[in-house]
Length: 300
Image (cartoon, rainbow, N blue to C red):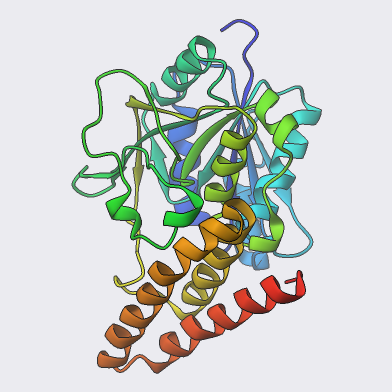
């Protein structure tokens, strides 16, 4: 790994305390040349001051303050650009509510070098509290995006790394070659499913993503459609599913996708209505409207 230079990109928005734990775990990484870029999405002045107080003097941490909230995709792209300018060999994109075990990155890099065709590699994503598996890789296609992601997860992981259809975006290693060929994350998606789009693009370009089960990242839980979405997430998730299904599946794949998608939205709406959460019901259908408007007009 003598020529390997990894840049971890951690996207922060008013979460300096959580980000502190993530960066601390990254700095404990073993056997890898690691630099850390904390991309701040125009947090409050108090939050930015906390980041500066924590890491402003650290030689292995750079704080990149954006002038406006670029959301997760924009934050990743800004950090990746800075890392590429510094001659990164690998990019490690992270949610700030993750904790990275010390050997994680070295194990990901080992398999990236063993399998150069992978392009994207993911760790085993475990729940922060009880270490139950959250994602050991996923197997999806454009037509199946509306199928609950829990049903698309790999159920019988192997002892060694294995090819997967997709990697959960909470923690994902991207080789520089892959990033330069695919280009940046789609910023029109803002957040949610941006990593799904990236994995589908990687597969279309001939890469074969892999999951490395002995590389461990802990994550503070995840929420699906029925588990308690906030209205903002509900709108973007429905909107982005429609966009990606057409972009990657074509008309045939989209027609297969559509009944699954509408069933998901209807069932989710009923569940939230029974809970008295009208705001989320309205957000779900607002996302449907925005998605179809984009499809017909060809614009966000």
